[in-house]
Length: 149
Image (cartoon, one colour):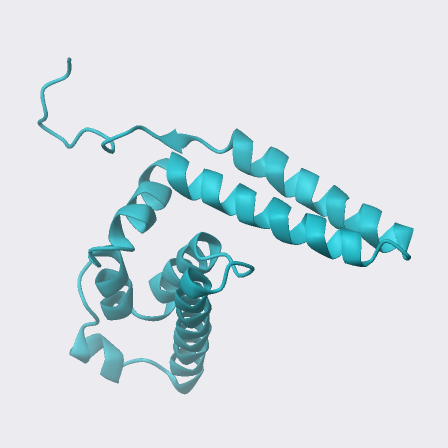
């Protein structure tokens, strides 16, 4: 994907610019939450980075290109966009953190059984969804032109 074309930028209507600005703001907020999630165990990183990539794809080719080529986030985003898969390590980390935080929260809310059961049901639904996602093979997907074993 090419960075934003300045000529095309000048031809955008006010409405198109506002919509692009909305997507860039959403992408920036998602990226910030994803980065914060690296340091806070209760906040997931992967979904926010993928959401940022989706927002940037709609709002700014330049920001999307930066994210896709980023040394840390790029492989995750490229795998998701090309194969709808995430690495096993990201799956395991996300599920373990989610179950830890949901279990502790459900235990703290044990006097409200409906809330506790709801939290655990949400965790179960997210677990089923995530386990069913394809897992990126160790070492990544073969590149075009790589020899097949």
